[in-house]
Amino acid sequence: MLKGISAVADNQYGRKVLLYLLNPRDPHHFHPDIVRILQEGDNSVTRWVLIGSNLYTLRDTLYDWFMS
Image 1: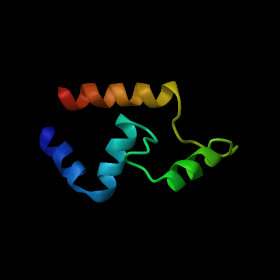
Image 2 (image 1 turned 135 degrees about the horizontal axis):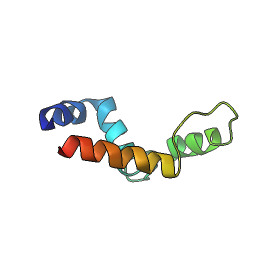
Image 3 (image 1 turned 180 degrees about the vertical axis):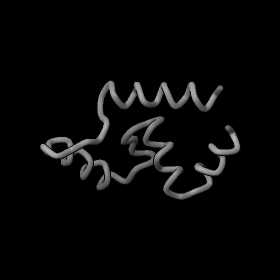
Image 4 (image 1 turned 90 degrees about the vertical axis):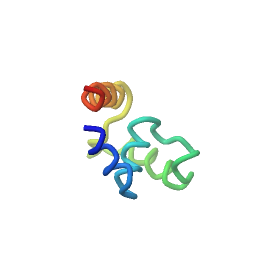
């Protein structure tokens, strides 16, 4: 399983997904303009992005899966 994580982390876009799951919208990893765009999308009626407790539930589930 760790081999798979390594492959994801080596990919430019996969790394961003992992960073977002571990520390969403952290300005150390995401440009402020990107964070602003994501915040604007939070108010959209068509949004499906996981925010709040749903994101942390997903993160915890993936963490358990990666570590098994």
